[in-house]
View 1 (cartoon, one colour):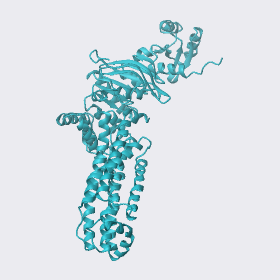
View 2 (cartoon, chains in turn red, green):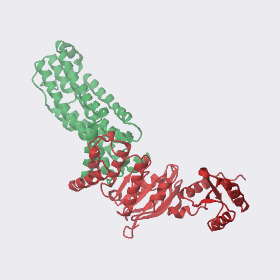
View 3 (spheres, one colour):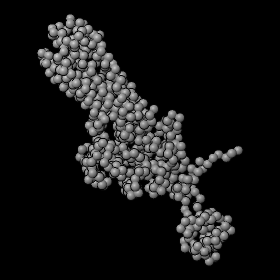
View 4 (cartoon, chains in turn yellow, cyan):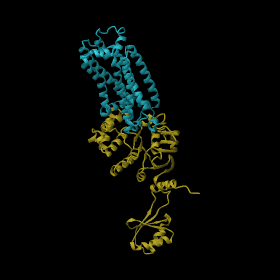
Length: 319
Length: 267
């Protein structure tokens, strides 16, 4: 539960129950300084509740939490002073200007006037808000609102960032910029980031580790590549001359594999384990097949996530 | 106590109120309708003051021995009683309505606009948040009440002059009403909204609920006209005590319930 050893967030058997619903169920994990942890899971899996528990705006039903070595339940204000939060629905007031929103945040966080002014100027320039800063937020585009929300979050220079679906409403360019920012904030600036997302590709790109939640319980935790590696390889993707495809199919089927035609003239051979790839390629060459491309179809975090949830969603065997 | 954060929350809520037509309209209209229209209407009734005197006969009969300073003419007595005593309960609607409408926007409206959670994640304690959220509505209600009373006093003096009476405002009754009872009444309006805020979903719903306070106030007006009691200094001091107690009680209950966890989980 200590900040000194580099652990910023420490959850130990944390459970949160709302009425008869267990939103978070015995969650245990730690997040170190400079780490980006992704929270994955279906809607209602407990991602947002976990972020709220870390920030101390919800009180756990049982279990213990430590953030910067403090208890968010009893030292919530101190925890939140060092924590920046970006919510799925940006919490900026649309009846105020961008500047008023930022100045309000500065006062809430107790920044002194000159410190706040310098930081504000720096952020509005880097988030390209300077020319519209005195307009009402109601007149901003969604992308601008999201940028303002980011500037608002970073204004008090927080060491821990809690991001709840930060790219969900953004266009591809804006989403890319946010992902890049997350990588920079964690890497160069050593901020600790916990981000909830439904975008598994995004999670693979920006997260050091991901935690998969299912009905509030942690069902997997690890590096994205590590988790993906738990799923069997999908096989080989081959690009061969069209006239040779029947021969390739026969070769594969004779060896006990299955073949799936794909778009763009490709075919996928299922069941070829990593160690059998050279054997398969040699068979193709021996059969005088014109091979234009061979690619091992590596499993991804998406495959892992789908496999995990297919197991869970599968109907129970009838007995 | 982080006073800076409390003032930041209150200041921001006041700024938002200024820009909200749904909030500013009742804040302007309620004092106007309750405190300026009735005395102006009395000017129009200057041609038939006997009718007013007849209406207030029960009160006049009861008060003549109690209020030795009353003018001798029944019409003048009637006008003075109306302006100083009968309209006094109506004045209480001003701080109550202003406080409750502003608090409805500040608490329920903030949740409706989905900006409440951002505030909950700020480095404030539940207590600071609670005080910050109530400070703006209470201060605004008291300020509007003071301003409304000043305007009412001016108009009332003009009306009194029209009936051949010397200016009577400010006076002891209204001084107690404005300085002691009005801030407490604003507190009751706030308490009402805080208590119902967990059960309503929209600002409109919350502000409509505050309309229930009209009933006892109208009851007080009728009771005075019927001669049941008079809004004199003693009664106002007592009323103020009751309202302050009510305010303290509701704030105590509401303060305990005002927790981040409850606000988010709706328990």
